[in-house]
Length: 64
Image 1 (spheres, rainbow, N blue to C red):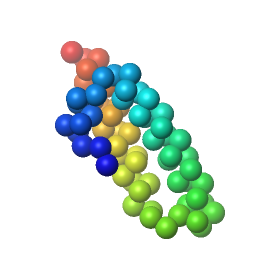
Image 2: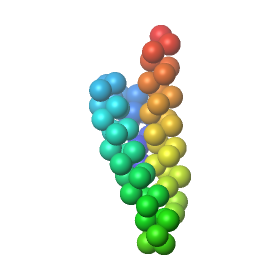
Image 3: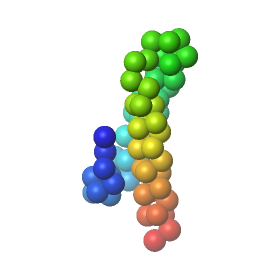
């Protein structure tokens, strides 16, 4: 899991690339959950929250 401190140290482009990777993972997790193949359901919320943190940091940077 990525912590806020680690995200803040990343550049905007790296954050955007990581968001894309996490969105793909989120799609796969949702698909597995819908088909009953997902064992670690906590990963769904962890990925969603990490994406939200990254987007929040990006919007904070845009406001500066």
